[in-house]
Image (cartoon, rainbow, N blue to C red; front, side, top):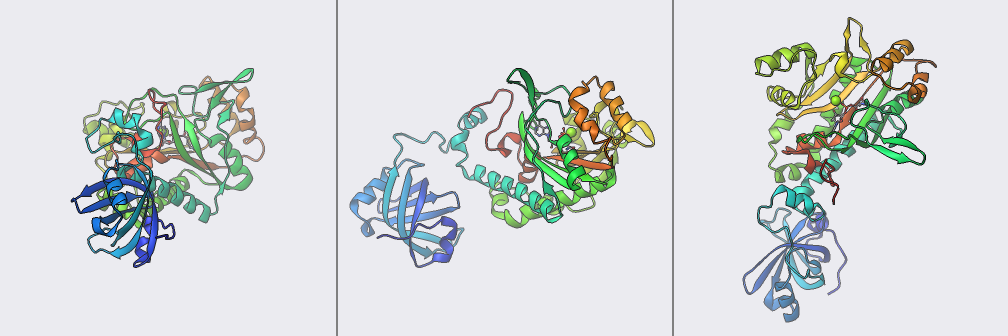
Length: 433
Ligand code: 4AD
Ligand code: MG
């Protein structure tokens, strides 16, 4: 039988037709007279039912000797099956083996340790759990870009190789750049600010790098950041945009990724609850609340990972922590008009212990104050001369933020650790695969 190549996701609409599925064997049961072949092709899974007396003897015995993850081309008829999740199964007429592995697939049904799984990330991605996570990741990115595009934001890409530090000098990856040194971008923000002066509402989106030696469940050395930057938005309008964006992302994932969330056993009631308005705490209030919760972080210091965990366990929706001390934040944040020790910034923390998913601020728009901040922080001035030009030629109130894609995916998908939220995690000790 020859039949048209059909993706598994399209099988429910092809009931009664003959089709060919190309994919991999992800499971098999056999009763002697029937093989049940579980097939996947990246778009879905389907059970192929192979009855001994309905197929050639060669095909039947070839199928019996298949290892998991054998690549195959299976031809058969799509039949209704109420018990199947998709409502159909495949009544197999023939199996053509593209490759039967020489030995057993390394990731079997055993429980493997995390290091083993990460060493086999290239194979681990085939598991149903990883497939669900990657689909949610795609939906997070897609829905964020859809939201921004529909709201009139222009994507203006920023460079990855740069001559200046974005977030401060610690945690920079330095590279040889011909006869000089360059850095991998920690943020695209400074370029997004220049783009905002050109186009008004912009964002950049790309990989960013931090040579942080943090071994937490929230830190990667390479992660993807979406950074809107908006002309004439102040601190408040900035937070409002963050709230709308996060609500849109969550509702889009709920709408389109129901089966993925179910595969991950995510409690979707927690996500359904993510609606505006989010909570707001001033930095000082957060420190006070943390003290009551048993933290010893003093006023004046940045919140630690554990602080964010215990704080966000108290909330059922994201919470903005506003106006941190100047001393713990980056040089470009605008001074608080009523308290020069604080800046007009916000961190948006996701509930259920997830912590920071967004960091944002109103930007310092005064040339003199910005120069003073650069000097105060002991940063070299020359690499920032172009950035200072933005405060020389038509300076403007503006604000923006960076949303870490993997942090958002980890929260929405309910992951224990950020390393599963990116296809190829990069951490201090992991560069392979
Ligand atoms: O708070 P951050 O450092 O802010 C900035 O880089 C600003 N320049 C962004 C802007 O205003 N345009 O980082 C922003 C977000 C964090 O909230 C977090 O979600 C994510 O980026 N992030 C990380 N994600 C994974 N691993 C890391 N090491 C991360 N560091 C920051
Ligand atoms: Mg931050």
